Image 1 (cartoon, rainbow over the protein chains, first blue to last red):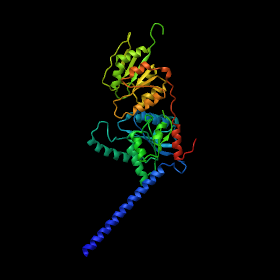
Image 2 (image 1 turned 120 degrees about the vertical axis):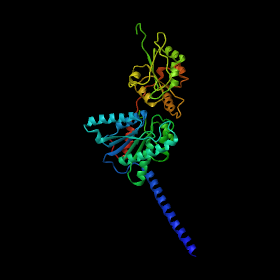
Image 3 (image 1 turned 135 degrees about the vertical axis):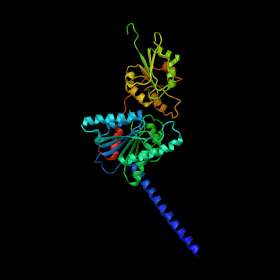
Image 4 (image 1 turned 90 degrees about the vertical axis):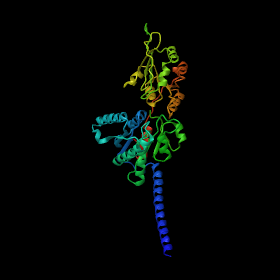
Length: 233
Length: 173
């Protein structure tokens, strides 16, 4: 008898645990679906204040395209601006610093008020072994998380480098958890005519980006959720 | 003009990495013969981190050949050249097109992720440049008609900026 009761009780409690776990999982899933649903839609309220903007820079060609976009974006709306580039890439941040310096001297403000420049560890350098890259990937994720907690951007602009993936995933988790709502814009490189890059494909398939812009019409036909915007170069 | 031949420079650029197959190709007799036949007088090669060293030449009745590894004034070299032969990197391609110079893009077939040919082929279809491989470069030079090239009009980032502004609820200017 006693034994039977105990068994009944433990099965009851395990059912209770199971159902509460299931409830939490469903809750998270519903939230994820809701975030994905709202992400693809324009923000409903009119923007009145400037938005803090994270700009993820890539190498040579990518950076040139991003700077072309920044040249036409209203600097008084997209500020403060946080630039992130891979720790091994000095050129890209130099170009961004040059741009911000000239902007600051035009408007007579200090660069430090409107822009910050940061470097991020890459999870894997070309040619690195896979065993050591487990460790470096962990460091890269923690570093990305640390940067994102500090920045908590409202807008993320990225256009290609793999470094944008961990940052966009963290931004998406922040959206799910309600820490910060950010709009993620991804501009596929002009070099991609027929197929999205790996970064673009991941953001597209996982519904991580709010908007994916492509520069060739045939690419938009392949990926109907992308938006064709013409050439940036 | 006059007594001295007009200087017509061909500038070869491999960008920030290396592309020995291209350097070898422009160092070959077949390619240099075609360049001479087209009236070019000088060949200047930016060879990057490549290990293959081309043969320098003073060029009395042949092509004058010179090379260097890197330069901070690539744009100046492009500006003073009459023909550019470039790797398929988008940086070099658009820098050359925006300076309105005739361009042959040579696709590196050894690259693992060879998406680079996409851009070169698309721009070749639109007659903004010629596209070749290291093996077919001499043929491309022999066959090319520079008058068939169409000028490239630079792109415009304002449509993207407009989309982003609208998405965030900023009013149109």
